[in-house]
Image (cartoon, rainbow, N blue to C red; front, side, top):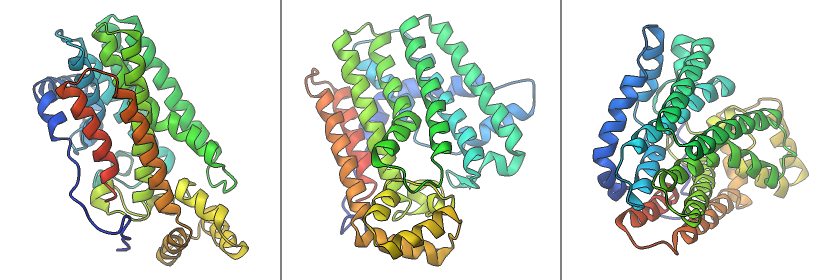
Length: 338
């Protein structure tokens, strides 16, 4: 299936996170060492399953946010390494669990762990990684950081259940969808950014700024993912284009196209999403209906809006290389559709 729609009327040079990568390179080297160490276990299957996903790429964006946010406020210890590793383990655990819930076959261009080792192993190794994440948080000794990350873990789980409860429900409102992605995706971005100033003993105002930045960046990131599923490439997504459609996920492009469509179009969506009629011809028709009603363009517009809120959250903070790099991340996330 090779349907690719031009989302924004022409390809522009993509924004880059090179500055963020360069600023955090030394610390990320230590994070990667800790990841490999803490993913180890005498139980053979645990490192096999964990390393399958850990070694499969991914931008490691969330731990880099933690490291840059700590640097931004002059932190000079090493607790940010453990917190960044905790963040990455939380993210990896949610991916392992996600792929079971969604019955996904591909992740980051490779077979998902569940396709190789089965659902039970994926869930249990995800649980192990969460346990290791919490051990590292406790090692750091910051109750504030532990509170932020443990709260995020609970919120993410709630988001997963909310999404499950809303599965295939075409009457889902835009507000309800935002509540799901705020919990499921944005909460970890927010926590990852906020623990940086926390460990650096920055002011409450600084903490609030980074929390808001992370939350709105996460919302923008997820909305762009939603748009890419109907008009990106497998390389951009790390999964098959159209997976959301085939899995019957009610994302924002679907919500908008369904609400704006005719009675006949709504009947198509019900048949596709609720009755699982999601072949290639159905996907092609879905993309056509989204284009007709501006559903993908408006999803991107919502993402840009949240990106601007994230940018404004950082605006009052002192100019630093880290601040500039964090702003670049906003542009990078949104440029994936350009």
